[in-house]
Amino acid sequence: MKNLFYIVFSVISALSVYAGNRLHIIDDGDKSPVVAATVFSRSGNIIGITDEEGVLTGCADGDCPLTIRCVGYAPEVCERPTGIVALSPAVYDLAELTVIPAQRPVLKMLCHIREINTGSTITDTILHFNEHMAHFYLPVEKVKKFNVPSTPFVRTSRHYLRHADARGDSVSCPEYDDVVSLMKVIGMETGNVEESDRIRSGANTDTIRGKHGLSKICRKTESIYLENADYLADKKGHCFSPVIFKLLGLAMDLNELRASLAYRVNDSGTYSPADLLYATWSVRITGKGKWFKKAFNSQSPVEMNGYYEIYPVDFEYITVEEAKEEATGSAPLVEFRRSPSVLPLPPAIQSLVDRCDALKKGIAD
Image 1 (cartoon, rainbow, N blue to C red):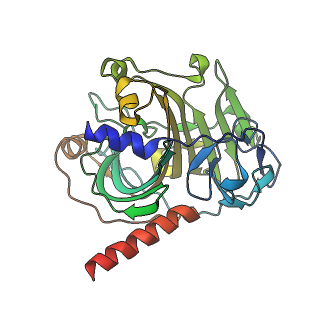
Image 2 (image 1 turned 60 degrees about the horizontal axis):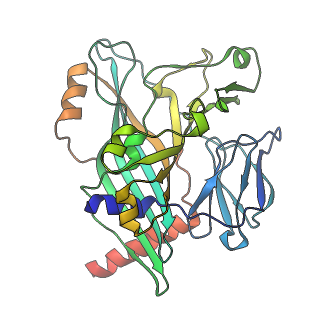
């Protein structure tokens, strides 16, 4: 149960009571709304993501300056909790792709993953930042009996934690080797992504509606193709409650599960996982089970958020046998590597890393 405490405390989200402020995020070029932009407070807490109108409410003066991040755009800092903010397109280093060798139908993709979890209880505020090197094993053609999950297989990790309460704040570099991560909620597309007919006909954007909201938003520029997918758009009330967790006393509502992906543009209009520049995931959960309430000594549900950035740094095509062996057996540690597409960290996260690095240096000295 120790692991549950780590999970819950590292991902609980702080909710603002200032719902009157309205932040509107738009594209600097065509002034269209920017959907699923993630907004961080000055302390690094995840405030929320913009809706299908590019709007986020609930930011307060004390949250500023705000940091705004969205796939396909350069990060932006906003000094006020209300008004219109225009995001400019990001510039990417577009590397050449590798041709698939025969008899090697599985793409082994090495990625640098950033995991940001923020939250608070009545008395405590916690900011948890993790960096991982992880492999994805993705079939690029139809493969029989290939049951390797499309979720990340973590090889190397770094952990940074800031804990603040009435007495002040402290930082640490915990070793959570055995902790269960919400990263198991995220994954990668295993097949090809196709441009819609409207995009192929020359439109810059296209939207696909689900049963209860926008399911997918597509956007194409000269250099990148963007897709934002809302995996709960077909769920009633925009909510999914896994039964298995309820049986374990971990009843929860999954209220947000959204992925944004940026691909290199090509003439074919078809994009494989090897075309991916980077991706983000946003996850929001309401924990209602007895173990969540026990962890916080609370009778109320617990709101939790997670934000993930995934940067591919290496691609290799391997056989099905090699993929199964690596996925089920022990794999060697992987050194940290960075993609040319990597974005600068939000200021509060960079401050946490700097403080932890100084702490480790002090201990070493």
